Length: 70
Image 1: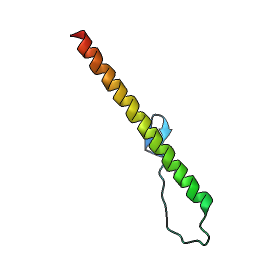
Image 2: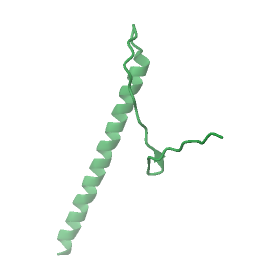
Image 3: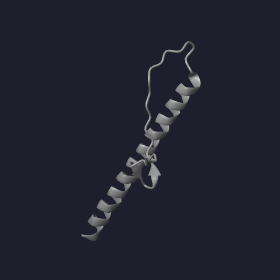
Image 4: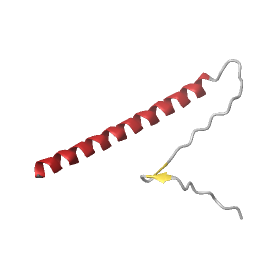
């Protein structure tokens, strides 16, 4: 019997996506695939920036609360 593989990299209940790109020369280039890859990367960067902004805001709020408690 074959075993099913499970993705061991899980974050917040969602599976993490891994993008791999292989160089295959095509004439003309597959613009649909290229555009999907660029969009996926842009969405990932936007999500990372949003998470960093939320983390930074929470840190600043905690620091302000500590100062007001003193």
